[in-house]
Amino acid sequence: MAPPDAMLEVRDLHAYYGKSHILHGVEMQVGEGEIVALLGRNGVGRSTLAKAIMGLVRCEGQILLRGKDVRGLRTFEVAQAGIGYVPENRDIFPTLTVRQNLVLGEKRSRSRQKPRWRLDDMYRMFPRLKEREDTAAGLLSGGEQQMLTLCRTLMGDPDLIIIDEPTEGLAPLVVAQVGEYLKTLKARGISVLLVEQKQAIALDISQRVYVMGHGQIVFEGTPQQLRADARVRQEWLEV
Ligand SMILES: Nc1ncnc2c1ncn2[C@@H]1O[C@H](COP(=O)(O)OP(=O)(O)OP(=O)(O)O)[C@@H](O)[C@H]1O
Ligand SMILES: [Mg+2]
Image 1 (cartoon, protein in one colour):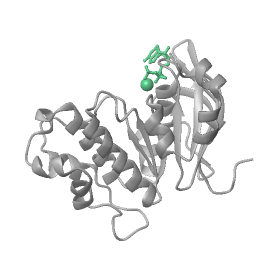
Image 2 (cartoon, protein in one colour):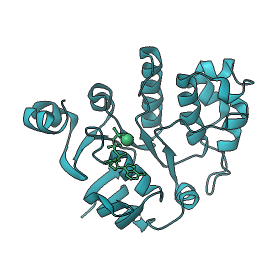
Image 3 (tube, protein in one colour):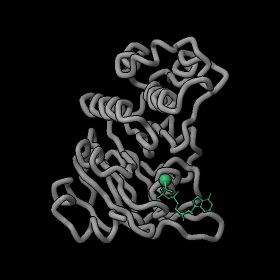
């Protein structure tokens, strides 16, 4: 049984693209305020799990958000229920300015009077966005677009955020800033499901780790346990 404070719980999840059966009974949980990393080699189904949670892929099984099944909801309804999603490909409105993109991400809060995040919080984490706030987002570099996507999702005030490979292809300085962003989320008690390829950042920032192989969870434990488990790393992670 899940602990009562599970923010997200996935039970026996199967996902499909047409006739190809990609996820085979995935079981995982993200606790309240917890950062959980999902690791695995290319093509094992990590992004498919993220998309299934967001209602972007056909699936069977249960996806419980605070105990309530959100499977089968449409993507905007999943977002309204409290899950933010940063997809692999940077997702911005290219003709709108940086500030307009951020404001568009903003959501009127359901229960809170004050929004949890303000533009200034975003600019503090990524000063570069402040410098470029009047620039059309399509003119930003890849790294800047990634910062913008991360921040726009946060402006939607999610309780849980799913981030798919946020550091891929970024310069080391930007990777470090993304690390700061993740630490800010942690400090504010936002739950995070972090899909990563880079073991170093994932193990550094997360409290628990899942490893996926061939559409199933093949390891679950603490970063320390994974570091100590050479067999799992060799079989499922290292190339
Ligand atoms: N739209 C799609 N239609 C058909 N098959 C797909 C589609 N998207 C992904 N797949 C297949 O599903 C499997 C899992 O893909 P997924 O994108 O989940 O992998 P991943 O673990 O995120 O790895 P990576 O991000 O490194 O590619 C792969 O075999 C992939 O080829
Ligand atoms: Mg992927």
